[in-house]
Image 1: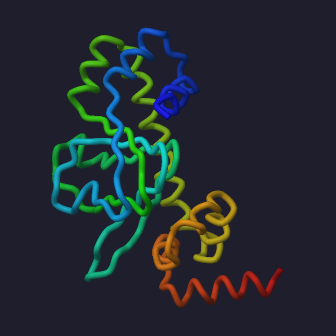
Image 2: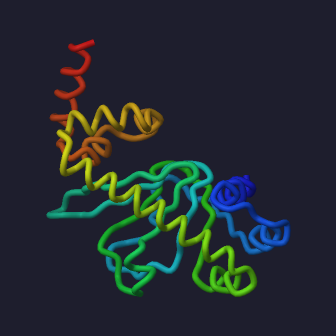
Image 3: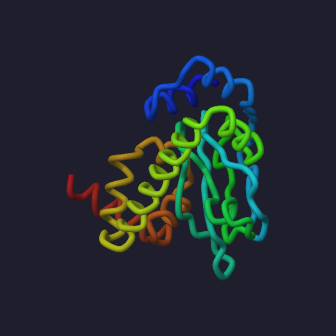
Length: 192
């Protein structure tokens, strides 16, 4: 399982054996139970996560209601970028939707690896570019697509989420109430 992260990095820029070994030596993998909270609103993030197994959710609480804005599954990064980079309190929560196996990274270990292996800093920058591009795509979908289109896109690109998540979280993610999601699903089933 530890090699998932190495393989991920290798797809971005090939690593030397020394670089692979250094990463593996500093790697921290933790198991989290479903419902575990990785970050609360108001806390300052000091860790980034790479999902080996499971599903992690990012959400806000607005007027007492949970509003989900992202799900992270295998080989995706979970980073509260603003909080971790600026050292400010988070405006959102991050929790585990399922039991999870996560690589847990922190700034100190990261900086030490960069010092020893400058190429790893380039890889990290490229990873952040990928994360940023994914976030832009999600935001663009909210601005340009209807909830039904967002539902269909999610069904096409991430069908596994429908097997592991409660409907209310999927509804929140596409920007509707659970009752509206039911109507969307009935309308789609009626078309097929």
